[in-house]
Image (cartoon, rainbow over all chains, first blue to last red; front, side, top):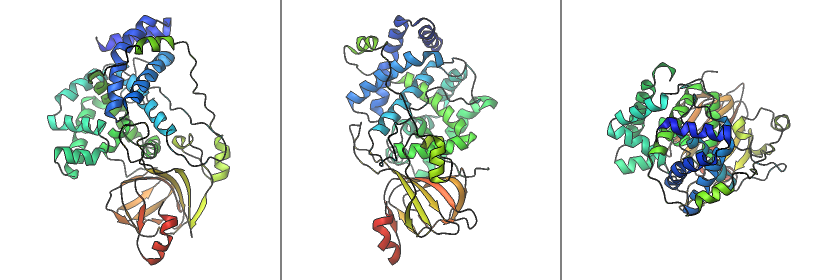
Length: 183
Length: 226
């Protein structure tokens, strides 16, 4: 399924509360969001719940989705990540509060930066990711999914910390560059 | 405001990935709110995240997952929020709290040592929490260091992220002013000194307790070794 069709499904939800469109999005994204949560270390049950919550948030926030600012996958990714962050915060022992205040829920709109606002940037980035040298691509993946990024990468790739840092910097530089001036 | 010190790429990527504990993530978010360059990198990393998400192998869901979701579509979310008015926090702390800290209940300054006050925000934890493996969760503290005051020399048992909110401090690695981000390695030993005119307010996520040097500082260890 193309990137565009995911965006169109979100629009269908926003405009017509289209349950069929939701079912299609759910079938594609919910199992992947669950994998993402598992990769970050979430227990199976938590990962399943967060995948549910993510897709329900997609339904509720569909009207906020702006396909000219972000691809569907980027938008859904940020929703999933923010939900995990909120859940993590709620599970933490916090200091006693001066009064009773709830946690503020993170804002799920795509980051409102003027940067990278082109509709085709995701496609360009996808290509650029594929074109990265294998080690750099691996490093970016590890930085995403490993628990203690620096140390884990150091251990897994048997690469000194300085090299890890400079290769990641190089990878980000290449990705930025491939997006042209707006990056 | 010219920001000189930034988080490493690995730290920014891990943050965008949702792969940071709450305390560390909060300090990075505070820096990014003040730093357009890092905000740009985070947006870039989110796009990478979307790509990686789409490329992940699908996990098996509960057989009734979709029907359960469809059954909940009409439900109203229970995420109503009531944050404390910022004006109230300002009058208690004497400065404007960064947005990323407003979701926490922030108490009042407590005395720690001469010239040093702090507010505990999150306790350190190594519980598994929502995960199926334990995860080091940094503590989060606000610090207010009086003009010219030195923190007792100390060594870090783990990584530490600091973002300066107001004023500045100096240590062997440089000068850190408002917006600057310090990523302290495990083995760094330093003795930060607050600017002699402005003092320094900063927010710190620390993975392990600090280990102080010197007999007097060691007496303070039970108090200072947060």
